[in-house]
Length: 199
Image 1: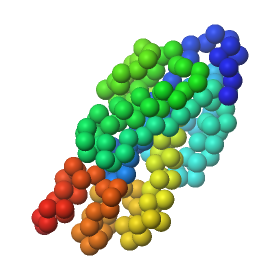
Image 2: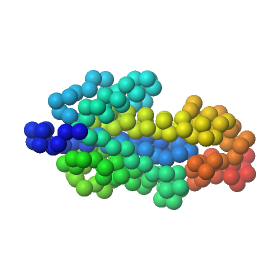
Image 3: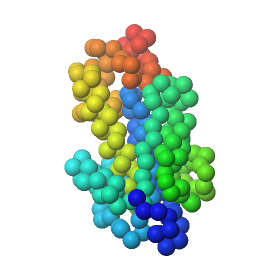
Image 4: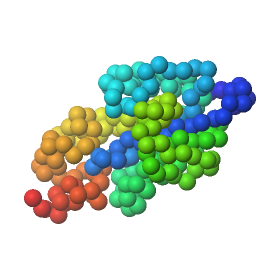
């Protein structure tokens, strides 16, 4: 990672995005990325528009050439305690806090801003429009997918590696059959219904 001085006094802009808000299991994961102005990365876009292989390839490029990057998270238990929106903002704060050098400005995907140590702008659809946010969306998605593969090994039968924690029919059927794992978000309606024994 390059020291700030080598950036020729360019403004250090961090992009922020998260993955996992709509899932019913596992953490919400956010990434923060400051791209190097002299090392553009071709193909950056919304992570959802990329194949898994392409995301992994781009994540490796981002990690190799960015000024700095970090991944933050908020666990399922935190989500259940403070709600998914607040947990998402906390995960973003944690990611930014790990950046070195510190950003001078942040661009955040969506319409809500976490409290950050620098000025920030919310950008709706930013993962398609802003390279830094695209890079963050890719790192967050790759990190969360890896997490789901880990949970898949820990809890066989739930098919976490397939549906990545989203409430698909397959996931809901496994929940009905096996019950909730300690990683499920008990405040989310599909999990709450099963815990309460409702059809």
